[in-house]
Length: 221
Image (cartoon, rainbow, N blue to C red; front, top):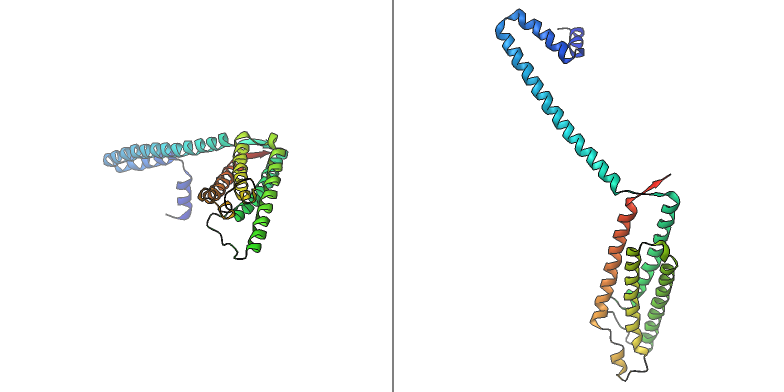
């Protein structure tokens, strides 16, 4: 069979091809007619099965696409840019607050300078840095309170309160109203060390939720 003949056969549709084969079978006799009937029957069954499989896969893809659309939250570009900038600023000031708080009271036991004057100076520097960072984070959060979903606001506020508790415990060393020895005043409780780990973990979880939330936003141009 030459190339032109193959091209002609391939260009024929199923019906035309079967008619052609039918003509061939008639010329060959009844046995071939039975074979053609079986071939035709199997071809139809195969076509239906392939069609069903393709339709099932198509339906799954359509459902997945619809689910993805349902999960999207559509916002204007202005709103998206505003929210993105807001959370970026909060992330920056909260990271600084948590960093300073973690230096003041680390998750593990910190090295203490042997020289008493050096130790007092370092303690004061760490405390002042942490207190300043807490105030900045608090101002940033409260200044944007109206634009933050309550769920996120409450989680930011919880982290800030935990950092304030760390400050309260650390500043006990300068509390002249207690009669306990100075050495006892300067001891950091085991709960405070554990609290530092809790603060960092809560901040990581919050950032994860924020990334998920921002990913769900779709900008309308």
